[in-house]
Each structure stands twice: as structure tokens, then as C-alpha cells.
Image (tube, rainbow, N blue to C red; front, side):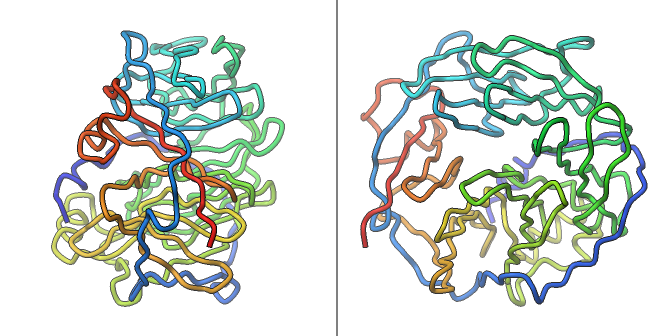
Length: 364
């Protein structure tokens, strides 16, 4: 694997609050197994065709340092850059900047870092893990509305469920190398959590997957780093739905229990296979990123009808950073560096910010 891939991982060290938990036994016999070995290849261009290209504005207020998450609604795109510009920017479907939230600081209406964001109709939620609160912004104009405390626990990512109830991925890094429940559902205001799910080694949170919570027409999914299970998330809990079967290349528990430096050394020596996040589902397919031979970053999809998993390949460059999938289209973003290497070079004049590409599924 290219070493730069692992050096680009987001490594965060945070204090962790302790909470009571309710054990939930997972029965892998009920899971849908997704095979990720001996895959059939499919050319990306044979399955998709470009429907639209959206170059995001570039200006002083528009600059995006690094994309950590993109959410989409009918009015445009919400782009989270949590570490460089510490901002959330909204662009319309033409790429025009609509607003820029950059309220870094302490106190009411401010965050230390915008660790994650969520969208629900006209409300934009921002998670500040340092101050253990969620900030509420108007999703139309970006104005701050209010904020509420999440409780006495440390979260890495989150998703809105209903009313004041959220699902959280708890930060297991300071819980130690043993098994812990890292999935939690809780109401705002400092109330006790309703339960915990997602049993895994605490040290696995030294590595973060790309976009752990994803939404689609089939509901809300959760997939964390170095965990082969994909969960459907509902108010009742994290329900195991899919499991990736990497065979004898599956990442071992010894690596998952190791400290950060040892784990990274083992990964870059043994090259185990594991999913890399961005698990999106529509009626017929499950799309996902995964780390393969020599750590190559692969994009695959599982066909629910045939039970076959395909490795997508390109006759030329094709995007792997999926941000949205439904039954008609797939939307992905391309970084400025990737754009320079792609066949799209010259299609748009301004590409110093990410370029979003909307694809439609080709008829069989």
C-alpha cells in the first residue's frame, strides 16, 4: 500500500466519558455476507455515464482545505472541512457558495472543531466533541439557532434519528485494547443513553473510516474502521445487516488490539484487507471502499439480486469518493489533484476546489 494513504488517516486523541451499557448479542447467521475476494471486474464506464459536473466556487470564503464529509439535499451541497478551514460551506447545484459557517472558538454558537455534521430538513447539526455539544444551524441561510449538550460521553461521529435523539460512535481510544460497546443512542440534554451496540476493540478508533454514517433510500447505515459489520441504525439500535467476508485476508484481532504505531506497522507489513467506509446502499446494490493488496484503495459494489461482488475498474480515472447513491444516480467528488489526472481536465475552468460529478446508471 502507498504509505501516504495511512499517513492521511485522521488521528485524534480525546478524553472519553464512561457510561453504563446494555449488552446486545450479534448473530452473524442473520447477516447478509458480502464476499470480497476473487471478485469479478467491471469497467466503471460500462455501468455509469456522466450526467452533470459541478465545480465548486473558489474565493476567499469558498476555500476548502480537505473534504471530510459532503451532504446533499435538493438545494445543494454541504461540505465539511473540520481541520484546515474548520468550516461548513453550502453550495447550490451550480457550485455557487450560499453560506460559510466558520464559528471556531469557545462559548455559545462556537465549536472547537466541527467534528461531524448532520442534516434534517431545514436544520444543520454540528458536533463539537471537545465541548460535548451539538450546535443547530438553519440549513437555508446558515444562521445559528441554538445548541445542546450531548451528555457525559465522548463521540467521534453522529447521526440524527428523530426529535432530540441521536446515534453516536463513541471514541474507544482511551478505553484500552479490550472489547467495548462503541455504538450508542441517546437523547440530548445530558440524559442517560438508552443502550450500546457495536462491540469492538477500543484501539480500532485510532483509524477512522471515511464517512461512517451514510443515508440512502433504504435508511441509515453505520460502518466503522476495522469492523467488518455494517449496521442499519434505527431508534431501536444498531442492527447488524451486512458483513464483509475478506476470507484469510481479514484483519486480525491482534492488529485491532495493538496500539496505534504497532497496528500501522503490522498493516503495512501484512496488508490485511478491510473496508474503508463510504458504504452506500440503494435497492439493488451496496457500494463500499476497501483496502486491498498493498493497501490499494478499491471501490466495489455488491449486487443484492445475484449475490455477486464486483470490483470497479476504469479505462481511465474514475472517482471513488462517493457521497450519495440512489436508484437513478451516483454522486462523487474529485479533489483538485485527482481532477488534474482525470479525463475531465479542461471540462471546467475552475478546479481549485473539489469538483462533484453526478453519474446515472446505464441501462443493462
